[in-house]
Length: 284
Length: 176
Picture 1: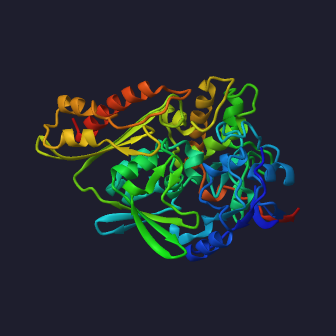
Picture 2 (picture 1 turned 180 degrees about the vertical axis):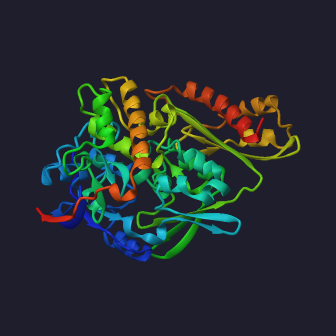
Picture 3 (picture 1 turned 90 degrees about the vertical axis):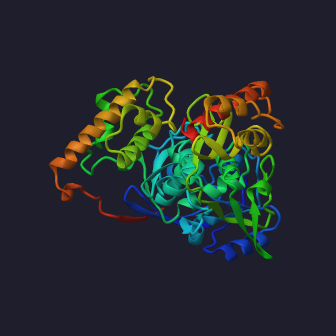
């Protein structure tokens, strides 16, 4: 199908983009790479009055080193993230998860920020950003503000972004000395994750000091598996403690049942995938 | 209407389009580039794959306005001016890497994109690299074989001929 008609604006700066979005009224929408939005437009699930295309906002592209963190421009494509030496060296969890996003064509167009702002709980980047305690830098008509990942994802396809706000960049703390892993389970190539688990783990000698675990597609937002994290602190880095901690993975989650998997199956997957992800991240 | 300008298969085109126009429809309906096909229209099958700025994209999931200022290559732009097929096209022909042929334009463009990044992929890397393209006839065996053989041909050619041998089409300007 062909999308409904809309007006189009292609600003070249963040402030100009915010103006265009404000001027466009409440039905104006931001277009990043379009890999989620254009399918929705084609199906007419979305019918914005105006699209503000951020494709020419160069200041929103690229990855830079900012001391104890990386700052990833929201318009950096998945392919650019994958190619970025800073990401590979300082945020390998992002690189690994990004390689599993959709397919090559989609990764060439789709953006890091777009996949976060879309706030699809089945997307891979939201749980990764949640596990990494990323901070979201947002621009709006009243200026800039920062929102932590724990507050950014509000509900299914709903983020903390107001209709006239734009996600500009994402600040990701460097986790020197941590082990990380993204474990994703899907049925066929390029499919959404049935369940995914993003893990970051810090250990000294044989003991786990700290763990962060976030789940993809286990609730209407990405969720931290606090039960797993608490069970691991001070635990020995062994298969047994990983398996025991993994049993807590689905606590407090509300997975859906759909044509691909029942809620019970997703609950089972969460415990198994968490155990695997923890083991790989801890290097055991 | 929004004014756009793009280079497609070496020719520059200037047009006014509705912002909602999908790139694949612009290529086919306005520019006559019917070698690029619409398959699923749901961003899954990859039959509409073209190169934009050298990168593979699904042209049913790109607005024509997003492609403004870009260099587009469709399957029609791969062959040499004398009609000599691109090594990937030749390999698909020789290894019978198609049956109905509907997925072939997209398969070939994805293979070109993959081989540009990874000139010597393993079979697993080929399958992974083509995950955005669906074929419902072949079972993929001969497609993987074609990409492998095309990679060999292109690596050999690269060693055998100096860079000056790569012929670039002269840019013409056309307004439709």
